[in-house]
Image (spheres, rainbow, N blue to C red):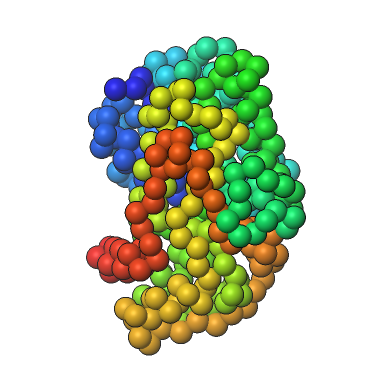
Length: 314
Ligand code: AKB
């Protein structure tokens, strides 16, 4: 049983499902959920919940001391599409929150940190297919630059100060339980909502844009798995590549049509197309497989079926 866990950004797309999974595993009172505002989702109130600004180190430290927190999962971030609209806000939130948590760990006030990175660390000069763990990284979005910089700081804090920080480069994450917020891969969730509501979806990416994606359950399992792995097996202290499924809007639409034959899609690429074009189409995650036994369990078919069944029963 780990020490008490604090999740910062618990109301977000990943944070809310991570909170539910960790509470199911360790008990409600063992997992402290927090976010910048009160939750709309009442299930987050099944255990302790704190309103907490991730950029305020004193406020984080108060919660750490009050609940005797040993581990922090820092899930608060501004994603790629919103980050392009508010560059300085994205930079300040994404970087200051990370420094706050790394500094608490450096001072020995917490023992372990999870911090999410993203496929956005890669850029147009990165090999696009089966992108290796270590490769050229010249991101072109504010979000990607903040994640790449964050990775360098994570490795630095580990090497210089012995901070036990662990990280994953998430692909686009798909779930029927939570809505995404401000990402470029969000189309892969929007498409299901619109297919069921209106029978038509206008996609903001072109039909042949292939991106790495993952069903949320796989992402949550990977997150918990990397945090439970023995310290000696974590060889990558920047962030691990993680892969599951790669598909285009046309391919996911075809699979949805298997369930909803009347469904149609049109394409109207906007500013997010350039972001998607700068990212890999598939990822090599051999290091995660070898170091901590990662493997995905959802392919496109299974993911589409679970999404449609889940949204229908909501
Ligand atoms: C986004 O689209 O910005 C995110 C990501 C890939 O990190 N889903």
